[in-house]
Image (cartoon, rainbow, N blue to C red; front, top):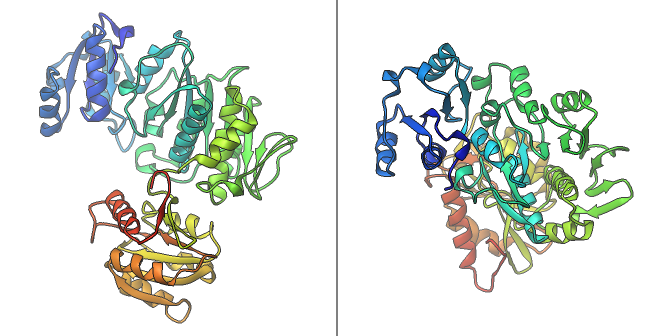
Length: 453
């Protein structure tokens, strides 16, 4: 944690005392601000007290005596209706911001740079990949925001330091001063509409990442959906990115070959960047790294060593020549589809608590499945869909599935845990399920574990 000195002498209300709220309140206090901290959750209040933060019931505070309201990104700002603190702040005419806005103000003028990544899908992998590429090139990098560390738990701003920040739409909504040196919008599909009211408003909030872009800044937008294509068309400073078609002016990789004019990088050789969705992530990372003067060769080498995000198409091991892939985060069919589309011969471990629609939407990929190992509560339901189309076995538990797949799999295939289900029937969350998979694979005799596995 470092001091937020830009609010010295100001009176600031902080609502929402989870991870980012506590670190922000502590930073404001350390920087000389008078902080009025509150949360509607009693456990959150007690946790903040234990961290040494003075608590003030904001219901009793006259907001006209405040300079700012710092709102947790998890608290409704506009939809379905503004939170009561937002109503009070608007009536008092004070600014409503988030911890990431305060962080951006601290960075301004320090010499540090911000790479900001947003989008519906792929932003976490893109953020992690950019961080990995820049670090591999020897740059001074911190990664955080909506992934990993809250911004005020990163190191303080310093010259040549680069902050790679994943930003959610909720965070951007509370960042009126956002002006990244590199701004990235991966893609847009309907999401969080309960909090934004409509797809139009959701897209408008995401597009604010480019609101203050100037010549000399870098802006990258995936143009393979209509919403992002429209955003890119409105701003001549934006570089388009596509993995569906080759672009004459922009970055593209429709066949797994990243193209930037005459420059080419074969992404198919990158172990953790399988599939078209990861090719988009790689294009974004390439564009960000080039903007920060990293050489093409250094980018390509770093991409080869990228271990991937845990539980997201993460190659954790090789056993008798067969890659084992941990995609435990695939908790529905849409997420599992990306993994199934990325491999040709698959021994698939699936099951858990099924989401609406089950695995029916995945039937176009059944021809890729050499065998399926069904686990958890959805096993019988999934078996009905697979019957007569794909060879399957009722494995029941993940342990049985790993053992069976290890015996059956051939070197021309992969063993893929991509459950297309929630984990709650057998595991607390998808992370615990993924960790269990890694542990079980690690016990196979003679297995070779990958970095990060």
